[in-house]
Image (cartoon, rainbow, N blue to C red; front, side, top):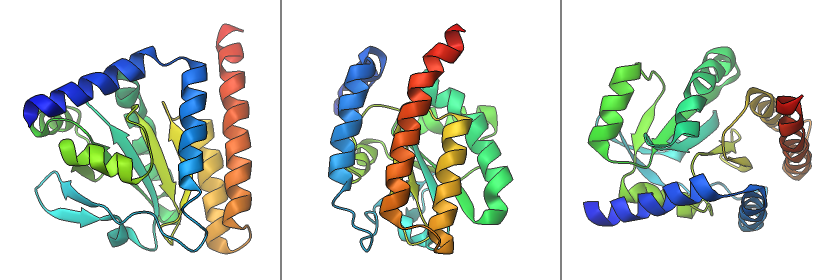
Length: 210
């Protein structure tokens, strides 16, 4: 099983390293089509995860919270770059009911060592081969990292494929809060978030080059 997981993770690593913008756009479009099965009344899949301490946890355990579910791996450079932002989100938005949960799709011993080395302080779940099944249950192709944003009713509001940036996270979470407050329908928020993520993504290379 370990060799099988290694092969799958290698494939995911190759996809992450080699995907160009058109590939990612196609993946995103495909993933968003799959997410249409999650209607405004239907919750995200209540997948069972293993906590780093070995205990079981379900997404439903966070009912009433805004969950930022970040799928990552220790070998993924963009995943590692996201960690300070995820920590900051949890600090800045914890009072708003936001919880950041990391789902490491990687070998347990590697994850535990890395988490201890950097002092990772938000909830950490370890999937190994089950993590790949969990990713599939969300309708996501295994390109890391990706981050699922769910509202207080466990409805998937947005999925960011690739490295999450502060401006993207802020826009998504602001709109999730509007959903929770009852001032914006889920589908309206999803559309606004989709369009804004595309705009920010298109503007980022120009900003970097300028």
